[in-house]
Length: 337
Image (cartoon, rainbow, N blue to C red; front, side):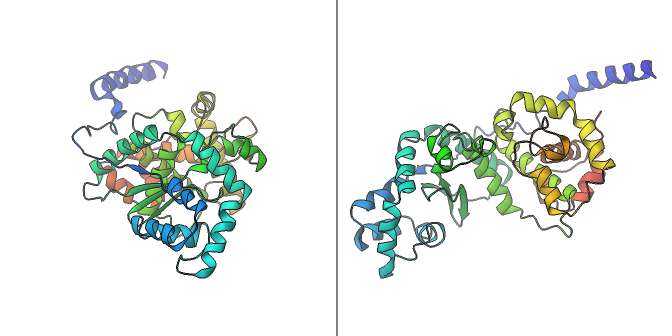
């Protein structure tokens, strides 16, 4: 048995040299694809109105940012429309709120320059156009909303709440008593990841016949695979918000985690409390112990999706459109060693 395994290993190693094991199948040439989206600082322009809250000043922004301006005022800061008399008093209260003022000050300091964010986003948009050449690129606008929104998508726009990305050492987050595990994801390098994650969710809403753990973890794995396709050169630690040590843990205990999910009948559980323990952000994945990183079921889902992509003749867009998550599992031949 050992000799046979050794022989198979050699054969596989040789095949990997010839085919590169398909490890870089998401690294495609996008050099000829034009994507030049500018990050528009709506947050700065809107706050400039605080010194003169009037129909004239806000009306100019309404014309410059059609649709988004109304959505922001009605659904993000909940002040209504600027044609209402009550809107202006609501706006004055908003601009005088301590947390909002501090958020604007912190955003102006942290995001005096957004060139790095813009550059990474445009790289993602080039990859998006590679796979979806008929896609219309959005306007990317930034805003401040009192810590209640990260990324919002609407027709023609991507909105980014910059106060949600001030860095895990931001004093405001301590004031708001945001836990450490959540602060890890509140960094500027998360912006492109969150934008493309929301883009995937918008294109492919989660609507399975049965909401169980395996369906959710594979769907989340597809979202992570989508982000990897948009940013194939981004470090895995940045895409997944894992440390090197956490990734090593996942790889080392991959088989053990998969076996536990099966043997403890977790895969097909519909208990939302249990599902959240495995898929949502937390200090750790509680059922697997305090040494286990959070969201490991999503990471496992990503490995299943990658295995499915490698073992089936399916294009990237076809894979992203697949909604039969049980089929993905069955045909993935996923069997961690």
